Length: 255
Ligand SMILES: N[C@@H](CCC(=O)N[C@@H](CS)C(=O)NCC(=O)O)C(=O)O
Image 1 (cartoon, protein in one colour):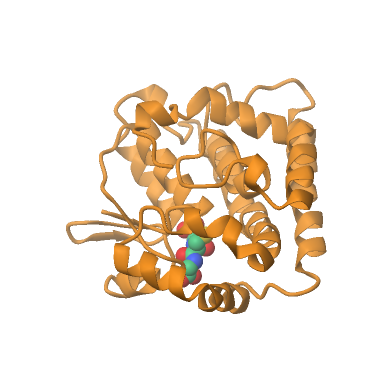
Image 2 (cartoon, rainbow, N blue to C red):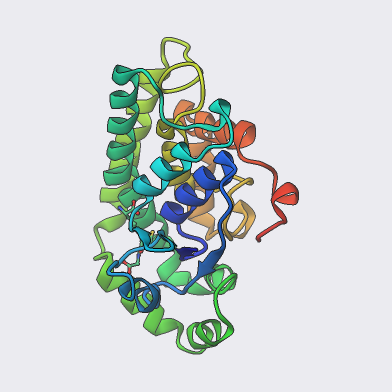
């Protein structure tokens, strides 16, 4: 069982890794905040949280490691064998978890919270009907939970945009020697984590959870997303999605 907030990018990281590796799982979506009803039962807080028998994995990096261990073939693994490459890939994964993952989420919410109607139809997809009804009836409560939990304030957008740019520049520099992947010659957790966690700033079409299309975003946000997509690292993340995320039709269209 994979507990998620369906549109969350950390959940997308875990879901993508499991699907890429060919590991079967059942997803149980929750509304932001209400996820804790499910995760507290297993001693966790955030999602993704994976439960299988007595095993509980309470963060996306542990779930990627499980996907790697249980991958159906070598090509479907995400962690390099070679120790230096493995250390490099894990360090990049950790960097993107701590920086891009936090910044892109805060940045996107800074646009969505004042225009919650844009996001609401996507928040309620894949969650229990009662939670969807609650969110639809009390959207202000959802906004307050997110604003308080993530400390979204007047300076958040500028701060987060700078952080996003730092990670984009970091990735562009790394790609400057012409390499196709951040580590080694094939997709690793570094590429997948970067692409999934940059998704709230890039809105890739192949994203595995429910996200609005770029045309439905608040105008100023859509303009920024277009510019970010055109950057070297933005285009790289979109290519990783195109080349390595099965199409929505193949996955059984979640959106
Ligand atoms: N380091 C964690 C971060 C997960 C995380 O921040 N999850 C967010 C959704 S994007 C969450 O659960 N938010 C709701 C909450 O904190 O209860 C991981 O990699 O799994």
